[in-house]
Amino acid sequence: MPRVEIKEFQRRADEVASFLKSNLSPDTRVKIVTHTDADGISAASILARYLHDRDVPFHVVFSRPLRHDEVVELSKEDYDFFVFIDQGSAQVSEIHKHVLGEGRNVLILDHHPGEFPEHSKLGHLNPHACNLNGASDISAAGVVYSVVERLDKKFRPMVWLAVVGALGDRQEFSSGFVGINEGFVKRAMDLNVLRVGKGLKLIGRTQSPVVECLRLSIRPYLPGITGNVEACRELVKSLGIPPEGKIAELGVEREAGLRDALFARSNATLISEEFRHILWGPLYVLREEIEVFPAELHEYAAMLEACGELGSPNVGFAATMGDEASATDALALLKRYQGRMVEVLKWLEGNLDAFETTPKFRCIYVGREIDPKMVGEAISLAVESGLVKADRPVVGIAESNGELKVSARATRVHVARGVNLGESLRRAAASVGGVGGGHDVAAAARIPLTKRNEFIAALDETLPRVKEGRK
Ligand code: C5P
Image (cartoon, rainbow, N blue to C red):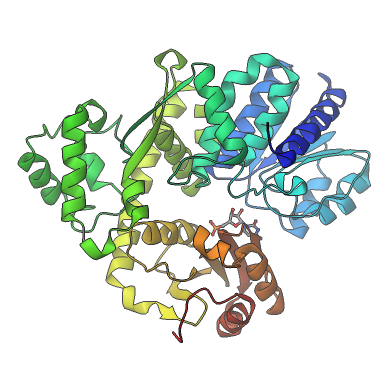
């Protein structure tokens, strides 16, 4: 029996599906505003396929959560139906005032915390409204899928895109998925869309020669291996692995041998349970008949994420819609992104003493050394790889267009001890004249350039202490 919260979510998904269906016709002009990341891209793709099937014209734009002035500008555009994906719940008062206020229909399909007021022209589906957690139970792609699969059964096999969204948003635990996500994986297996295997989760395992795959490994970052082609060649040679072979083709024994060699070479003090799980664990592989590449979904999610990070979410989106040339371009963007992130992580590895420690969090000011858009992901990767100690939340601050961009990451252990980064960043940013928000484990803010120290003090005040002892 599903939990009562899941039942409630399903009931609301039914309502939202009816809302969507009754407000669409081939004359309806739809504007979709979605997030630039893997989850936002796969979520938009699910809705786009449905609209395309129904001959409803639509226009998709990719953006981080819209600011107040951007909602005002959007409301002036000539569309009948505005859909906010992977954002909107935290911007609902602006949307209410400027878009619903103009008499347009609005659909919000989000999984970030926010507010859930009712309105006759608003359809709104969000796990937080049903006491589910949008950081672990379901992604935005899962929310969109939950609506579309109710409208037409033929869209059910698209469930793999809901798994991609969840992977992109790091909703996979070492023990697997939880909540509604768990049901998506089960359904994908039942529909014979996906098989779940086990192996090295390195990005490129199905696409790149093993040496290239190791050289570009950022999840995890492998000190001494990542970015060092000679070390990669030597390691592979010592194991008798052909350097041009792909990891996915090595066979069980050789793959396990490579895993053991990587564990053995990693600094023993850095090897946490999490590091082991990042390197080795479940693989979600699409059945050949689906004809989507990369067929391994961690890789697929990484590809979409890279497109977003490099400012080309449209390329990832076109790839998800089945455009082959875009799929080739998206894979090239993945390699370019990995190459850039290798440099960023090397920089972090060489500047670990720049981290300051407050009683509540670790913080690094990177100035203009790291692209502000890459800071959040770089912190996630540094923590997962054991470069930065995860005894308290980690915050990165970069200079971005005359203001400061703050990215913060916490572990689920911190959350269990009372941390909610989205809420803390929102409050700390607001206290210095900025804006912030996000999930309990991942959040961001923009604050005035001159307010760094004030913000750090405010955040230290706002966050609970998760570490025992004085420091
Ligand atoms: O930019 P970064 O990757 O650090 O963002 C972390 C998370 O915070 C993302 O999921 C983003 O959507 C969310 N966020 C938000 N509201 C904001 C800023 C960020 O929900 N005002």
